[in-house]
Amino acid sequence: MDEELLDLLDMALAERFQLSYASMRQEEPQTEKLAVQLIEISKAIQDSSTIRQEDKKLIEEYFSANVEMEAKTQQYLYIQGARDCVAVLRELGVIK
Image (cartoon, rainbow, N blue to C red; front, side, top):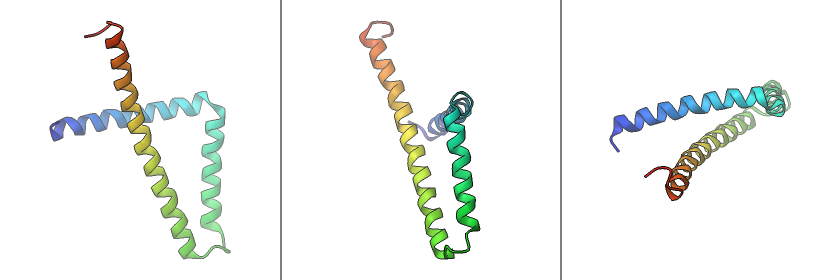
């Protein structure tokens, strides 16, 4: 695929993910609670006087890498789900 098309696809997917995430937080009360809990834990780590600065940095790097991996996994699964949907529709003869 050409680079411009890939950029457009990335932008469209990012928008879909943001809309889905906002919708999920509204529709699933547990998701909102988890988001608030993550913010509180992050703040507690940053404000802690018993955790060394080097350890705080390592924790931050871990969570950052984890979030990035999760985002890439979600993107892959979203695209794979779209492919699977098209494949099923083709098998059913709904689309060619």
